[in-house]
Amino acid sequence: MRPYARLGEVPRKRHMRFEREGEVLHEELIGRDGFEGPSSLLYHRHLPETAQDVVEGIEDDIPVESEKVHEHAHLEGFRLQAHGDTITGRQWLLVNDDVRIGLLAPQQQQEVLFVDASADDVLFVHAGSGTLRTQFGRIGFSRHDFLVIPRGTVYRLELDGLDAARLLVMEVTGAIDAPDRYRCRSGQLTEAAPYSERDLRGPEALEGESGPVQVWVKRASRISCYSVDQHPFDVVGWDGSVYPVAFNIHDFEPRAGRFALPLPEHQAFAAANVAIHCLVPRRSGSDAEAAPLPYHHMSLDRDEVRYFVETGQPAPPRVRPGSLTHHVGGLPHGPILGERSATSAEAGDLAIGVETARPLHRTQLARQVIDSDYRFSWRPATTG
Image 1 (cartoon, rainbow, N blue to C red):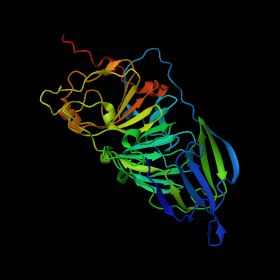
Image 2: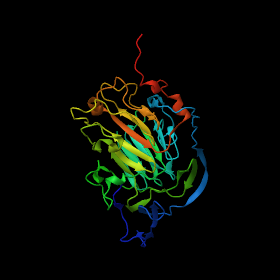
Image 3: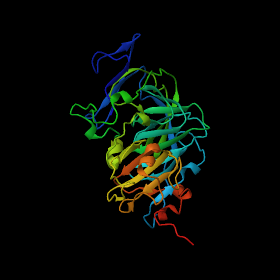
């Protein structure tokens, strides 16, 4: 997904001796798939491994509901209250071995640095703004930005304000990238892709910090707290194609057809067993004989999640901004009786879609915000 980029000072060739102001700099490789995947080389003023202490941190186990039946669900995520910081405040609702999906409404700013060593973090800024600070540099973000943060990135999320901040959070164990069908053989995004490299915003400036700092390292469901001698943001330069990016959902170019288009036409990102979609305002069903609503369907091999960012007018039944719907594989679902026409519905709604190849499990927290009547939404209204 990321084109080659370069920021700051780097030597003429890889693995050369590199000095600055008479001091030898320390080269660090951050790479995927061992030494065979994409990578970046960073140049530190100090050894990146030096630590004076390491202690056990908080556990990250998620209590999962013991599900007795399979049913569609509406999770009223807008009911979740502010909690923790941008790391400890993640409230997980749907999980499996490939992805965790939750919401974040922090009560306080993140103080320590954090690195996820087991997952790529995908954050969607429903409301709020701020700065993502990393060893690759800083990225400013605002409302409706995605932040795609590859594993191994040391970061702190600084919010401009806490009162209105609300984010959708996904931790994805596979590597997040553009779908293969959007790329040519050289790796460039093609003209058929719904966004281009110009739409991806990488780090803007290096941080250049120094001195001791605490870093939380998450591996699997355990967090270890490292007290390191020198700040990981002491980088003077880097280059490569592994680094965090921001992408605004309004830069996604939707597809339209004579008839309703299937969900893959709206895909933005891909990972093993996970697809992330941008459901943005669009026109569809222009043919005079097009069905007035999208077709009912049964995804035999996928669970489908939709997070509602904005709803058109009039709003669809039951859901509102901050809602999540979870439609389980093997059960049919589609338009609810009384919904708007396809044209008006697709013209104003803004949502994030997630498909998973393996079943998602609802957490105990999800059960606290479930709309228990949603599973019966497709029944015709009865009259007395």
